[in-house]
Image 1 (spheres, rainbow, N blue to C red):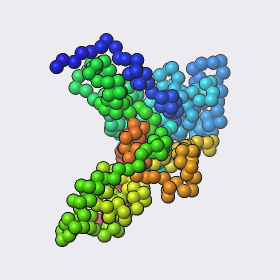
Image 2 (image 1 turned 180 degrees about the vertical axis):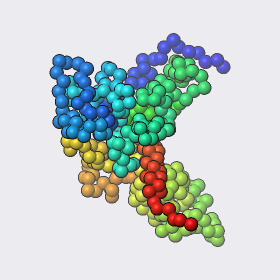
Image 3 (image 1 turned 90 degrees about the vertical axis):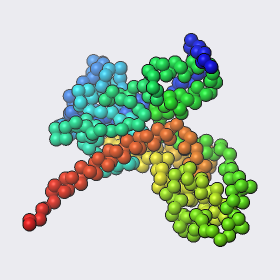
Image 4 (image 1 turned 90 degrees about the horizontal axis):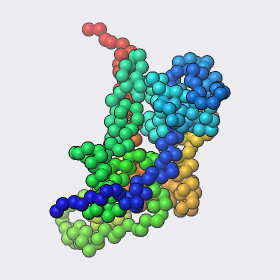
Length: 372
């Protein structure tokens, strides 16, 4: 059966492809990692070149590497300006520096708090000692070396243009199916959503968990059906706890289907919290970071705590005990923002692993050698 194509996507599809204002704002909220003295950066527009306090401080330590917060890109390649003052601008072209979005920077320092601006610069840009930057796998996000190429993010065996045309104009699919494939399927647009919008309201609105089909599972694994054969569900609860704390979500849910005794005796909420903390820690908010002016240090945590208080009435001091962790875990597994958060977390882990290897190499090189 041949597929009939329209000449253009429907208005519903076009509207559904738009990124949210929050996604766009987060993608323009940048932290610059720079090595050139800030006083050498010039303003691209305006008759006045103002010098900020951080520029003056950094000028005292010429050629040091440091982070500049609250910057946004301009229309010029490699040029950024302060979010609250367009006349304070910075040029990170010609390998003078790099930008990281603030949410990604927060994730990086949560995964590897030991990293300083010098380490980040060295691993992304390279330096005189290490040469080229390290190889990093960014997952589904393609890059031309510094900037992501949005349309090329799709998974296709044809050209990028053919993929998007065949998907967006496919009349054999509903608008909802097209948008699902674009955002969550092979279109991979989820990788450009902001990685810090936790599905808290979705968790509260979600229906209760299913009953795990008791007519089948409880009969199959009940005490009377196999009285003499020991199984996984007959292990001591303490051992089951230790095992479940190291299971991903799908395996965790499979364990719950074993029998009613497990579901009744296990503290599912606490166990889900422990398992998620161990196996999928990217679903938790970023740790506080240090900023030059002391602002935005708890931005992720403040948002997280505020949303739980607003949507569920849970105060910060009671979050660990009262959040429905299993429902939250399930919602995170379906959420595009959390999927992107996991991708960025994996990038941060690569940098952390490389950093630890470099430290180990230097330690071994400095250790005294025995003479034989």
